[in-house]
Image (cartoon, rainbow, N blue to C red; front, side, top):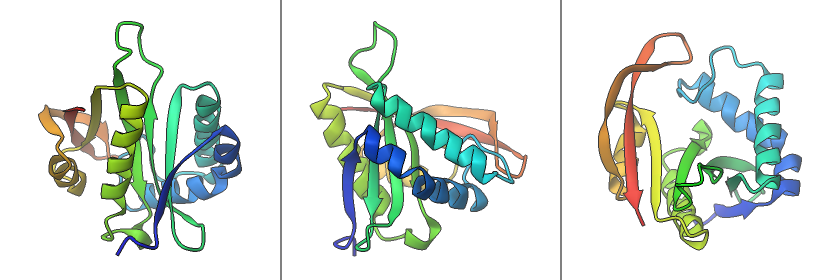
Length: 175
């Protein structure tokens, strides 16, 4: 199932080289209805600029970036851990932008990305992880199966890409 998928951490140079492919995954996710901070239509320039910013964050050790690649080396998924947090939270990491291209879904890629980010978090000395996701979405079940604990839901926290409100569920995980 996922034997043909490779999940790996990429450095700042690789991240900078992958911005176009990462933009493809982001645009596909937003067009598929994912509430991940962007609205429809998502201009390619805006998606590319976002990933350039992520690559810069990787270069400054503010973020960790993982990618999932198919056997052809095409990026089909990604997840990040934000490391740049307040001084009193050196043990915490924020998980962000867990995305899988629609053509690669239902193959266990998201589960592999989440397991890999747990491993990286441990190596980076993180003992508490947090994330948020659309309330009632498929990702909630993924996170619960991966051992995340639901904290609660904030109604009307964000907008869906089409402009409608959505609630957001917050989760944490102790490593």
